[in-house]
Length: 190
Ligand SMILES: [Zn+2]
Image (tube, rainbow, N blue to C red; front, side):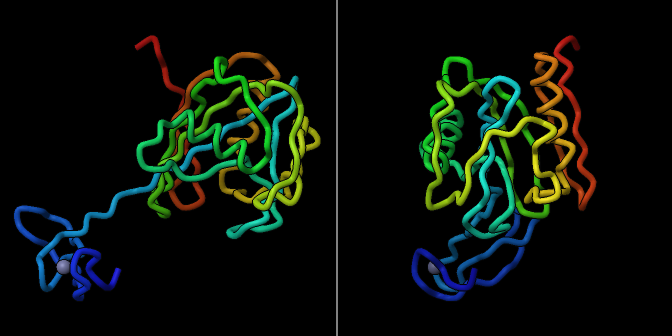
């Protein structure tokens, strides 16, 4: 950030008491511009033992495979956002009444929180879009893991397929520290 969105003057990074972190502060109107992580939502859309994936037609990782995902809009609830992104990228519809939380995680280096749902498709209808050059349902053994956009979280792919196969689902937390993806299952008995 270089200029103040309130008045257009230059901003500088500094600590303004009583705060204890550097923030972008306007040199003219003194507005403090707080910056916080963005919320990324995605949904594993399932059909039998398969999951719907897209070949990304946008950067980053154009040409590689990922789950349909995107950023939460202002005023939007999480589930609606996940279903919307899925529809925008694949034109697939999920059964919202069976949508469940799968994982909440933290991509610290990218300043993003990610929230992942899973839900069955209403029917296996989908198509390519501007954001997806290919849209496909893959069984576990068919998933092109070598062309996965985010190899640092490849364990997450294993996890969702395992749950789908066993029909036993949990909620997980994830923290990506460098290349180390730490996933923990939420223990609801404690
Ligand atoms: Zn200003």
